Length: 155
Image 1 (cartoon, rainbow, N blue to C red):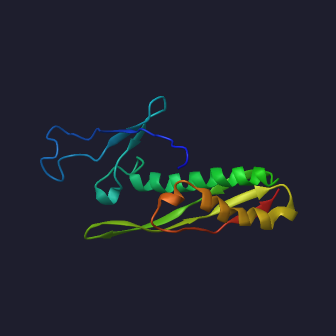
Image 2: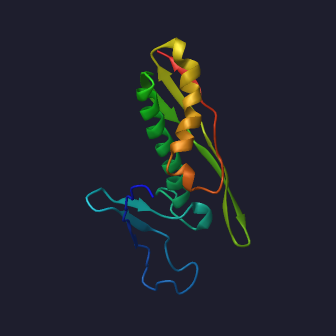
Image 3: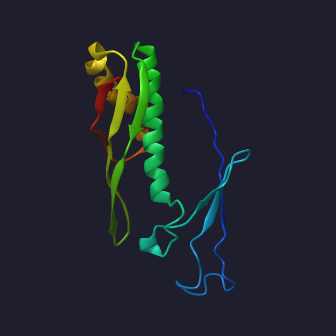
């Protein structure tokens, strides 16, 4: 067994408008996500589910965690392979399908645009996305494949 890492998050519902969950329309979906020693995140549900569109929702955070984990592994692997990355931006996309039993994400595609300093390393830089996906803790915890459509540029 490998080394264990433990995480703790506090979720506090802030959407009680005075009558609690007396009915489906009587409460807000607002809540606060907190981790000790870090700034809180104000969140809600997606507007499709009566949420506040100005706040992060679980689906936003799910997609962001996949993209962030992939990027961190990718940068690590580039550093280990002598590839100097000077810029990285990913506009990740995901599809969630509702069903009678709730729903689930059916696809996630990362669209990383990476800028490196050496044109001779573009092929290797693109290949490292597969390895980053293999090592990503979040991707390894999912029941759907994470696809990649990378673009690599030279500064």
